[in-house]
Length: 416
Image (cartoon, rainbow, N blue to C red; front, side, top):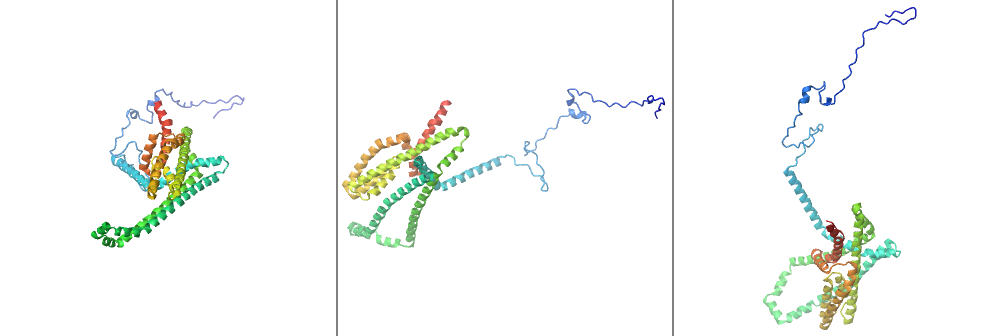
């Protein structure tokens, strides 16, 4: 116990043992990270880490399996074996073949869509022109569509009555034709020698009637199918005309932004060329039909308006359409009278020379600027691939490819 001094001096404190000094950690040398600590034996620093032993059938790069709970530990993923690669390739081939079958089965619908797009691109300049005159877009589309429908109805009215009339006349003349054949001694001798009458009566059984009924149903199916396809093309064309700007903007938006402006300029030029080709082809076809109508009135051909429509429609087919229309009208002329047939042949021979060397080059040179050899080859390939539709879209397609070749492919080859 400390003793207090009564004089008020500081108490005499007996010094105790000095406190134990806390050992300060020694400064770690720069190479201390490599030295072993107290928690780690010195022998472990000198032992290299164990090298993993590869397990057969296990990919060392794949993460280890993690237990999933009550269902146990899942196995490792399948390795990339030759069997798995072959199976994946077979699935790809099967998918490609399925896609091919789908496109082939939907080929008819796709052709109708292509025709509708082609007509919409060709008719869009008329809609744009009406819009510049102050007509609203909806009314412009309705006016163009109504004009197309009226032209189509006019062609049907011009073609159907002659076909029905001629077919009825032929059916009415069948008995007289048979009587004239029986009066011919040579034909009568052949009929008696080969028992033609008995063979005809034997063929008139239920099977023959069923085949005839199938033929009638096939003809009705053909008629209704044609009407359905025509209405489908007409409806699709109206929709494409109504949403033409939106569809074009959507197509350009799919292009990367860095190339969008150039693609838009080239695409607009292609659409302009297609529209110019359509206008030029329609102008040439209308001129050919009007000229044929006047000529048919002069030489007194039967059904002049129907023949003019036939010439105008066939004249839309490049390279071979004008010749086809000339042959049809000339055959009608020869059926009417020999001098009339000769006059038809001479008229179309002269008119085709004028159209091929004066009218067609001046109209098409300003619109599409396609080489004549390329146009001929394109028309032949189009007929071989898609028939009449291929011939109609052959020249605009060549014009588009020619523009892409001149503006994209050739400059890229020059920079290399």
